[in-house]
Amino acid sequence: MTDVKTQNAISLKGSAQLVKEFFHYGVNSILYLRALYPSDSFKREKKYGLTLFATNDRKLQAFLEPLLQQVEFWLAKKQLKRLVMVISEVKTKEVVERWQFDIHTEDVSEE
Image (cartoon, rainbow, N blue to C red; front, side):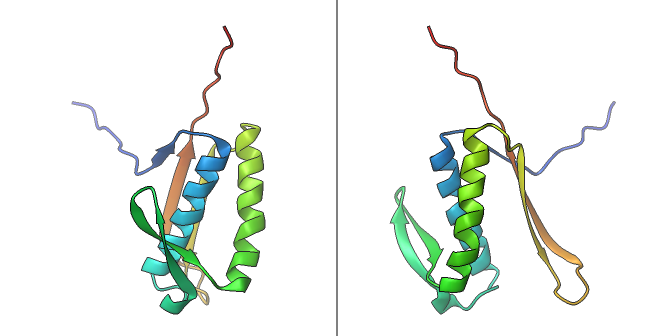
């Protein structure tokens, strides 16, 4: 028998804008659920039939928005293959949690 190595990765398909929106809510939800910001720094939003979290903290928004705009740009150009979010200890830099999002793009041929 051979050993099979499994990967914990999330594969994403869709338009650059849709995938950017996924990252927006994904990052915000991780920050909320891991209590990395106070709970009152987030608002609930209904999207896709779900209740999702989005920050209302202006400093966090100012940090995330240009990052997500760049992600959308790279997605549209098919230059992004992976996005990794790491939660680490501030003092020791020890990784507490790591989220890896693998991105697969497909060429659509015109007929």
